Length: 244
Image (tube, rainbow, N blue to C red; front, top):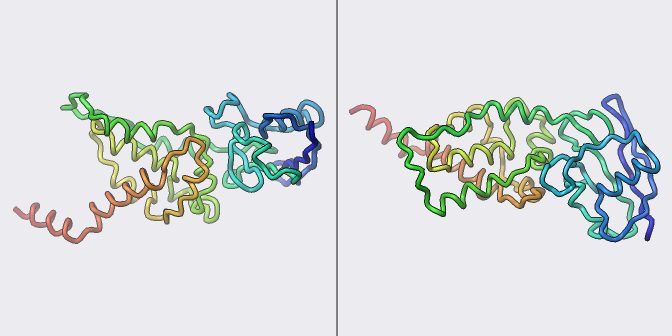
């Protein structure tokens, strides 16, 4: 066994600081194991949200060495050996205590999205390529790491005008579903703030499910919005068609 120093954020919305803890690192340990060891041996009041420890519930998101990660999926042997490991709460959401943040804004956004609504004439026969396209988006575990790292939320705090990458993925899964009958283009343009995204792909980089958020969800949705509202030829055709 070797000893690692963990610098863990302790505090609440009124303030706080980093506190150093010595952790006995064992083979195969992940950051969440280290946090549990700290709770068990040194700081039983350390607040940390977790559930499955299998990278499927999305509960244990934090910033490890400055990068948003799932603590249960971040192995100690993948971090620089001998260096201090810093663990702090996700910066884009209001702090509750220690490593726990208030992510309720995300669920409020989710309620604004009309759910899957099958077409009246749907035959429920789908091509495999259609299944594959929307199945990727359904892998999302709602860890909200992509929301946390997005600069529109993180740096500019435009939560009132922006849904964020997680919910662009959800809208894409509905818009690209061949059996869905609703049109959510106006929602993307006017309420979701899709135009604020500048496709830096930082959301894709932190996704633990390796969903191609930018390439497969955001960019296709941007193209559809542009075709609908900003393509001059499409605008002219709609004017001609409506004049008949």
